[in-house]
Image (cartoon, rainbow, N blue to C red; front, top):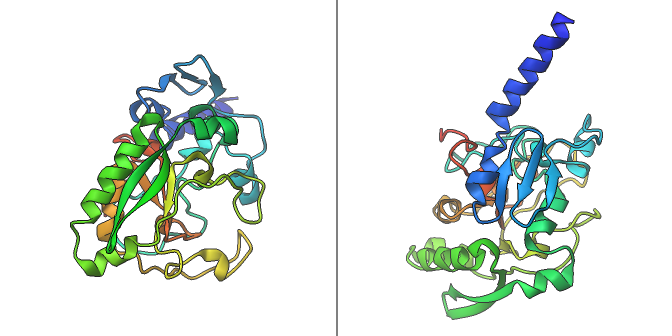
Length: 255
């Protein structure tokens, strides 16, 4: 019994250190009313269990059955080095879909009610991009574009070909893409790197590839967007608004 008690206490401490529910409250102050190790409450009255009963033993279990605790189980390394991520280290890729549906819309029709259009600067002028206005994501992405426009041309070239909102599932899955909620953007899709071009299996051993400059990455991170290039399953064109992974109490120390 004492051994079980110690194990439970250790697990609780681990969750506080590596999955602090307060990160949701810090990151979505206009949308989240409260959060603890049992429940997350949105300001519209929607409640979610912080831990669900679904099995999360294997990697496939975790990515297909993530809950709010699982979303924070890997700390995001904001602004860190270009060291390739460790095996199966994908902070932010483990997602609890009902949470995002509650924030941005349960279906395509509801999501599109919240879609606004922003101007995104390119080397030849600007383009219009559809983005959600929930939580001010549209304003944040606009500000990101303005900062990228000040970078040298050798870096700015990697912000061309931008694509944002598109209601769809992730390739080879039935999980909604973050693009479906209007909170993600892909840059330079024809010249960046994607892990499935090397190996289709989630648990395959793959090498790391990236050409996206960190000058662009750090601007996105400054505004609450994480980068797919910090994942073992790298998606170096991809950025998504996930401020809970960049909250002061959740972000990894910069190396």
